[in-house]
Length: 68
Image (cartoon, rainbow, N blue to C red; front, side, top):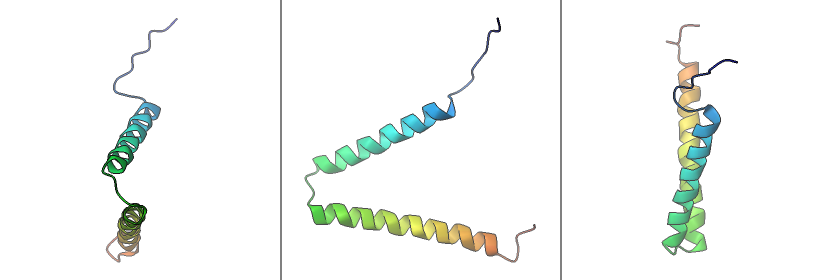
């Protein structure tokens, strides 16, 4: 029988912690008593940030300075 040593956390544990943090953020926002319109606007802003991040990553891949 081997004695396995684990250093750090498993990737599944990290994902679970990140998901828990996301749920806490959603709960905290809901506790602020925001309206449905405000909730949709927050979703819109998050989508715009994600789209911008994806666009920048795509632009970096298309850069002529990238060595393949």
